[in-house]
Length: 141
Image (cartoon, rainbow, N blue to C red; front, side, top):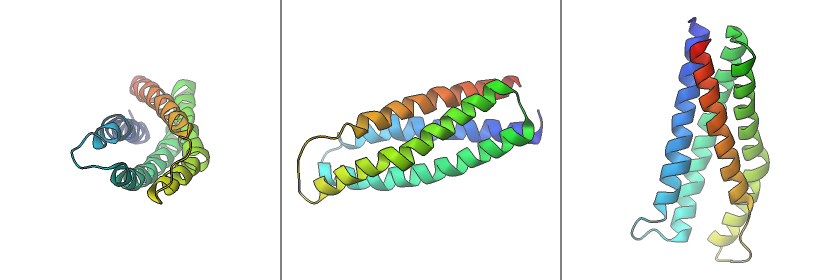
């Protein structure tokens, strides 16, 4: 395994671990902690997911560049592309809807619940599957 493949594998599994830890463990649990109101949970969530997405964009860039350099084959390339595209859709299209809704709640408003949260989670699942496929494929390349 060359250096580009090794870096691609590392970026893939670090990215995967971050998504699993934050999206599927931290996010749902924070609202169950004693004393955490909806407003506090949303405020924390916005900060955490803004930071997560920034690191994800960096890891996606590293993964894309190292996959281009390493030329591991079509499987890892497609899986990495799916993960990167899912992230871009989340950041560019879904998160603005989530931000609008959380702004309203933080300002004391109510209104109808947004379905954007479920769309975001759907893309998280797509990313997890794509990252597992990419990482395992890269290890075998």
